[in-house]
Image (tube, rainbow, N blue to C red):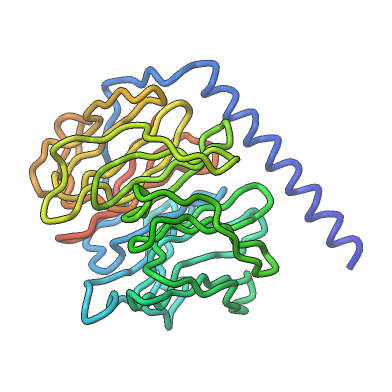
Length: 311
């Protein structure tokens, strides 16, 4: 047992070292990305994986099947796994409308589950399949993020809060502000600020470690039938956000500059250069642990999984 623990710790330290080296490279080179980057489809006809998306350090992709909203929640029941070669399999089954997800460095998987618009549970699944509920939160818990100590942060679509949950299940309010109601996608920037995308208003908010909330930017004219930003991810000095109702990906700098990053605005699945490619209701978005690529899920149509290699 002691030998196994020691190996796990060494592996974790090495992974952190690689992550720091990768992040440092991006920080030094800045965020001036090649305009000739391309959007590629890596899983087609993927008819049910349409929500939050996570990538592990081996390049495997995990996407929640929220499905469609029926009565008081999503009718999806699974999280799917997609290998770097595009092979799709069922990773977790028996869920109820899963939303935000994340994986820690030990292979534990976290997902917002069983949301009935009155409350929802934060579920932890270990690599051997053991399930435990870390906490149940009132409202409509939606997005999920982890810090380096594996504390879990959860946004809420109905309440103006972000909660922090420890591995022991202790729940505290991490951020509270009226503008947080409608929050879904979350990610940490490299200064330790928690960035939150608001699905309903298309605000991008920043929560400092002391809990202060400020507006980073508002992406104008993208809310369609109540749908603005699906999810967000942070790469280097930029926030990437999905415009689920306008079928585009946006890039927002940390000083609030907004630009259309990818997508023609047509609701279709077309690969190609950033400005020539098309998405169909892009929703989930994440980067791999080394910040070398962005991965996107789509809410409508064939719900393909898309990839943009950044470097």
